[in-house]
Structure formats: structure tokens, C-alpha cells
Image (tube, rainbow, N blue to C red; front, side, top):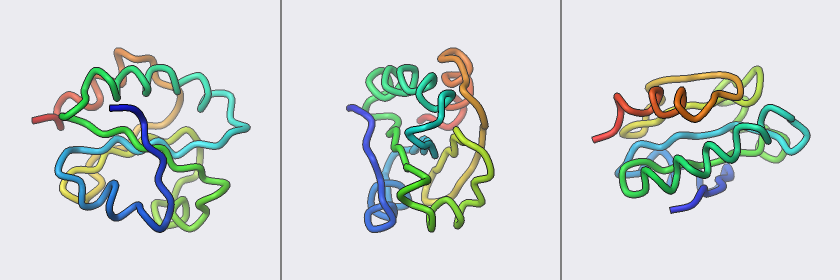
Length: 107
């Protein structure tokens, strides 16, 4: 499965009510580190298909969501499980670090 994009309108459906854990990438188009981590997130989404969803939220377009989750810097990666945020990481993490970050939360 590829990376999905979420808005205020479908965040509940795509993230909060997801049957699988969801890694949410709060990002912006102008953010260099956000662009740098994108290929690793794309690969993770494909490799963990069925076990993990990867969803991107553009903080410039979805300011209410960014405010709700108190996003202060980007990229911020927030892991949701059963509708709750269970872990947070910040910065352009390399793929091995992303794998370590999500591993404990996968079934």
C-alpha cells in the first residue's frame, strides 16, 4: 500500500478508526527534511503493507490538525494505535531508525 494523505475531514476514518497502526507524517512542501524522509516513508508503507499505514498531513493545508496535535516542528512523525497517539519522533529519520520506531507497535 502506498502513502495516503489525510485532511481534517477524513483523519478520523484514515487514522483514528484504522484497524492497523498508523504512522502520521506531519509535513510541508517547503520543508527540506520533510522531502528527505519521504522516500523512506514510501518504502516503509510498501514493506509493511497490511501491518502499518503511512498517512501524510500537510500542516500548511491542515492547520487545525497541526494545532490539535500540537505540532511545533516538522517533520513530526506520530504513531497512532487504536485511535490514540502512542509515540512521537521528530526530524528526518533514516529508514533503519523508522523501522525501529514502528516495530514495537506492529502486530
